[in-house]
Image 1 (cartoon, rainbow, N blue to C red):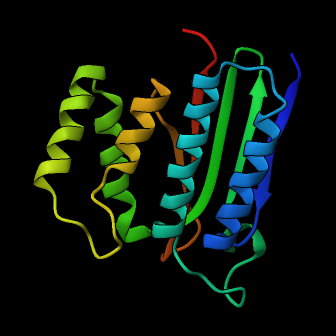
Image 2: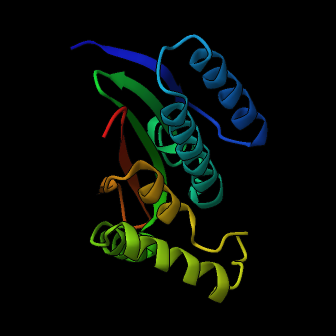
Amino acid sequence: MSNKVVLDYHGLIDFGTIQVLLRRVKDIFSIIDVDKSVKKKVFNIMVECLENILKHSNEVSFYDYDFDIVYPKISIIENGNKFIITTQNSLQNINKEKLTNSIDALNKLDKEQLKKYYENRIFNTQISEKGGAGLGLIDIVLKSENNIEYNIEQIDEKISLFKQTIIILKKK
């Protein structure tokens, strides 16, 4: 089964870049023969991933790290009966445990538990200084209807690389 690359980007992520990437995927989706609801899921999860990268990527310098670590990556691959979204970005080591605990906890919940948890976060969480209420990962798991696969690779005493993979099935 061959992979069809919908998006493969490695570089600076800012609001302008996000707009360009979203437009590019929208254009590609206009010619792909896939159910509209699946395209919508993939697109919405892509938006959440890009927002998470924008909000939570650790700002690191070319003076200290190479291109692969400094700039985030995002790819969307169509592979048979699924789309695979993969992202990578730097992460401060002090945030590793919190992120790991959050993803592991979400991956253990069923759909109904996730919905209740989401509602609870909406009504009982204050907006953080980064502008979020911690809904992005919940939204990703709910929309993909799959667990988030992830890996955190420590680079040094300050930062790690966070890699995640989200699978969206074309049909359930």
